[in-house]
Length: 304
Image (cartoon, rainbow, N blue to C red; front, side, top):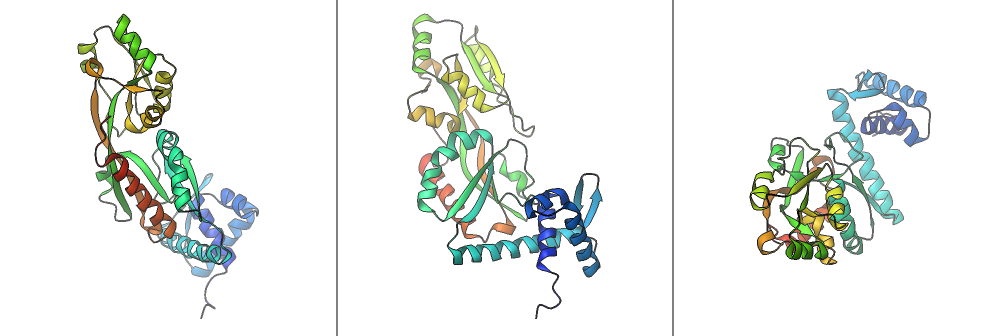
């Protein structure tokens, strides 16, 4: 029945090269030489009489036929590994890509809740602020991002799930708020300029300066830096609910009240799942948990 199938060794070499975009990276993963991988790919192309890769300097790019085979090879090998792990009672692997801020301030602090419900899933968090090509980067299973999920509506291979709408307010340490109320000094504000060019900037200068004409504003390119400036007592930070949640819970930061209340509604946090992994139990368990957590914590819009 399977006599006409290529060897599993060549399929593994092809899948790893397609997923990593490099014969050299595939060789490291498979613990063989790049030359061995190149020979396996060439033999596979000759056997199928199909060109699978365009060879470029320092990288390889899948042809249209290569993309079709890569998707099938990934699903087949992933399914085989999942069944083998189930028989061996080994954990299922799940790699989640998200922004550094969301990873540090929300996902990692809540990860123990997911693990307690799903001890058989080995979850890996990959923090990165650059845009991820999840359709082709098979090192990643699901993505959590902030922005406008409607930009993905035309992609039939991706499914997005809205989690909650972000909201930004002013936060500072209790001692800094006390200083503001008692001494009325020139106030230092901190905010974030997004690295992602598709995100609308948090431009609150005009509204802020009309209320606090002596205010000084400093921008960082990472929300983690913005919250650290507030936590160190240097000033007041314009932060999203995700960045501030853990510090609020521990009473390290307080939200501004009365004259210092300020709120801007942002865009959405959403979960993106490529069609190639939509059937996996680990992916569906994570999706279910994220949607339940978002509903429980924020409903649709957060109010401090």
